Length: 293
Image 1 (tube, rainbow, N blue to C red):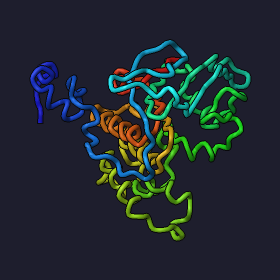
Image 2 (cartoon, helix red, strand yellow; image 1 turned 180 degrees about the vertical axis):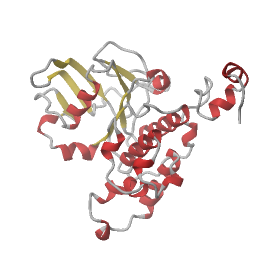
Image 3 (cartoon, rainbow, N blue to C red; image 1 turned 45 degrees about the vertical axis):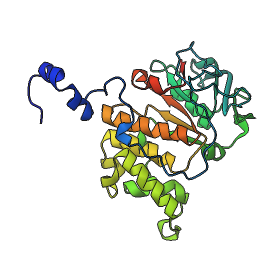
Image 4 (cartoon, one colour; image 1 turned 60 degrees about the horizontal axis):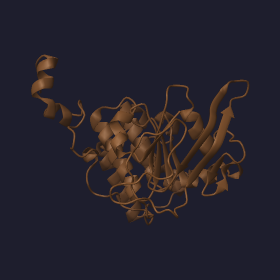
């Protein structure tokens, strides 16, 4: 236990406070360490993807490629998601988005930033079909997303809500984690999980620090634990793109490290990430590009 005036503890115990998740890790120390170093057991073969260095850019746009020291994105690569001149207004209200352009490729980690009310969540909901996108403004793998049913999008795009409670459907953490594997089938009619599925589920629980919470109601978790559960629940079925709406909000530094570690594994499996955040300073060194609204 540490005891003393705050100023004194900050001077003499910085390393211990960082280990407790009360301060950010020192520069140069690997983020995501709290989530461990082993790869998440793969449920599907990974896609080929390059990693690129983060770079701030102009509002409402994202570069087609930002080269990394290890090599640039292949010029022939096709984007997963394209946003072209997207403008959207709610009925009877002002424009929420105007003239937005963006491209997201496999392996990208894009940070979506902006003030409250700038349209970040609106953009994510337009992508998922929770709001009607104008024809021709959003394309998924070259197809106009307006003609795609929500369930088709959900098969390829994982979405983590800003309020994790909106996602919970099961009585305990374990059932919540594996819910997507059963597609809503009643408990008595469910098939047994394969060994690979069980391994992946338990590994994700370990990465999220929730191994000892298996039988606890999701609603009784801390806010940070709820967010971690909502993230790993989406990871049970690997998807091409994950949209995370403020996954680090209200977390301590240790929990943020876990989120970063999980995101790094998403990239290793070939997925792309679109992360809405008000904490870009904590994550920017891992991002490939930024969209600022």
